[in-house]
Every structure is written in C-alpha cells, then in structure tokens.
Length: 111
Image (cartoon, rainbow, N blue to C red; front, top):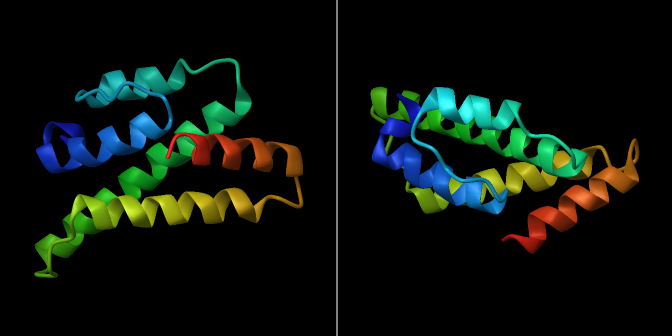
C-alpha cells in the first residue's frame, strides 16, 4: 500500500535517490532491496534510516489526514526527513565520529 500511492511514491523517490537507491513501488521489493544492502556500512545505515524516517512521516501524514489536519506537501515532508536524518546522524557523533562523518558527507553529497 505505501508506495502504490502516488504521494508516498513521490516522497520515497526523492529520499531513495538521495541514498542512491532505485525507488520501487512494491513494499516487498523495497524490503528485499534494503535487506540485500551489503558492503559500505555508512550507506546501509543511511538507507535504512532514510526508509524508516520516510515511513514515519508518511504514517504521520496519513493519521493527520484522517483527523482533518491540513495536508502536507512532499516538499515539506522531504525537508522534515532531511532535518531528522541530519539530527540523528549528528546525535551519535561522539560515539562513532568516523561513521557519523561518513554518513553526513554521503547525505550532503547526494542532496
């Protein structure tokens, strides 16, 4: 259901391209794609974080629409996801500065 919706797919397309992933409409194929990520730990973690944030914001938007909150555009949601990812990556800078730096550089280089 998630990426069959044009709104959800448009948002996921923006985020997936930031992670150098091919956006897929099928939930199962997307899960398989993310599960199959190997190699670069920073890319894998960033991709999973971005997917998680996208699902969270889409679900929040869905609930808002059900409860008569004004609709949010994909541009506004994209900005919120971008901010959330930056904050999350920054939050573990002291624990693992090398990984945090690599993830942040990767996120900025594709934006």
